[in-house]
Figure 1 (cartoon, rainbow, N blue to C red):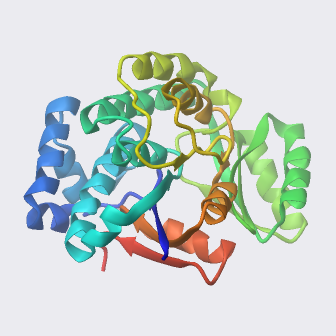
Figure 2 (cartoon, one colour):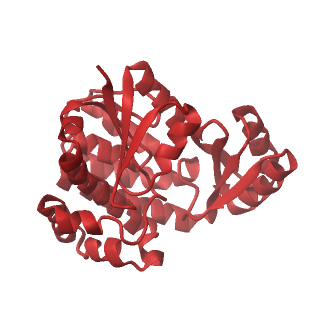
Length: 303
């Protein structure tokens, strides 16, 4: 019998119009957006459905928007394949998506999860504003060559490897001059650089100032042992102890996202069928780079 794992997307998967059709079709999904308006103090549904894109893409907006829209997408899956929701045995989320996974797994309530995500987005935006920084994807290079890129770019400033996404797709994150240098080095050694449109150097020590605010927010909510294993971005392992989960979520903002390792941990745990639940199809694409034979379906309202 196949084991099912749910994957939830992270920042960057947002797009204007996300969740609109689902909210129109499913009252339970619409209620999530209504609850979000009360918690956040602004109309998240209007921003998700109508934009503008510049505001939706802001870290303080995109994180709550993806969190809510991904949970809303579960209502679509509940209609299409209710057995998948009942049979899901593992979960993981890319960066922000880890919060969505934990809420799905019952570790946090929707309301508490959204309050923490709101504070996380604010704290990460503030850390980014304090230090001009960015991120660059290095395509077509293995991990060893990406480390060479990091070393070569470090002459221009602080830079780290931030995301191990899949074979041939690794993200560097750091100060803007170092990111610009990384682009040059990637091209020099035969890779393909893609500067990312993000607010700052996420998943690096440059986000350290966000940790205290996030820790405070997490200590203000109740975390329960998840009812199914949720693989952590930090160490590619699942954890049941609420205090461990809390600490790992704080560490996540300053440490690399081990996404490829997390997927391989799900495979080692027996997962054979995957559902990407939420906006976009980024995770499905990464899955195919990890193992072309993997069965992964995207659940969203994008044609």
